[in-house]
Image (cartoon, rainbow, N blue to C red; front, side):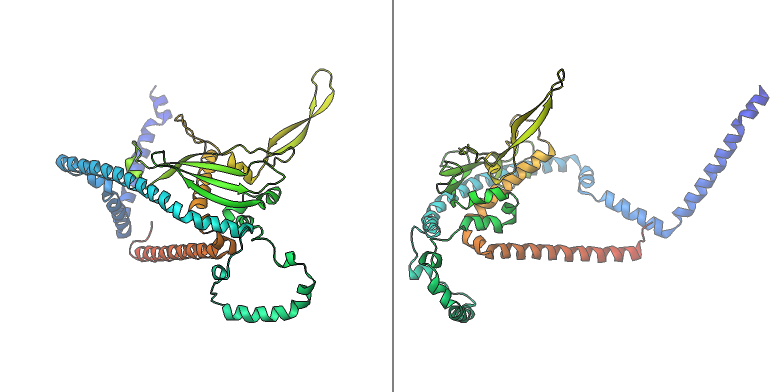
Length: 375
């Protein structure tokens, strides 16, 4: 039995373990005597100990009680803020009525139903003199062509393809438009925003007005965005103003064979018993801007949507908000591209600030590295 115990190597293992423990302890002592290692460890400890949550935990119970009282006040502030945004919505409704006569005249100019007067069409350009000189030169060169052209070619009705051009100019919209959508969008005459009536739940409606066309019979296609301006009971501190929570589309009355939101495919099926093959046709969804009017619904039963659905819904809300806040109020500037240039310059400015900040952070990191090199 003694020989078996020795052969098992248990005492030897114990000796070896003791040696390893001793070596580890010596190595630890050597590492801990390194001032750079100690400084790095101290920095990490400082960062941990100075987090807000850890600081709050160290406060006396009476102080924590007062902090809870402050949180209650903050919740009340959030509810007051919600009321503020409700009144802002009322103001938007009031001023929308003031804007509408101007937007109605805009539509008349676009469709050609009304011709602007000389006073209405007068506009001073920063490059007016250059434009005039260029215009004079151009007139001399193309005078023969003008004489040969018809009056309608020289003076088309209204502003052709006004809204369609905006769709092409704005990346957020052009990404949604397929080639077969384009002939339909050329019939778009106006886009309006309608706010919910007083006393009704907060919402807004986008109205897309179309001239008679060969694709559908609806004169107007609508998209309703439902909004909420109240703090979440589960997380009241996350409230930052009204948010879109759901949307409803409309039914498009497509003419026969003109529905671009579906496509017909042929599929072969083989009979299991007889082995015969038949070809069937079926309709499947097709990518199109007009799917915009058949939106994904937000889950109202408490169940969470999958990641793709969440992204689709968020994108839909963003597009609706962009129509309301930017495109409809400033349509002519998106037609000419001026608003797009302004947006691009603003985004570049933000990126520049971010890059500069990152550079500062890198410089700070380098300074820190000189004092406390990373281990």
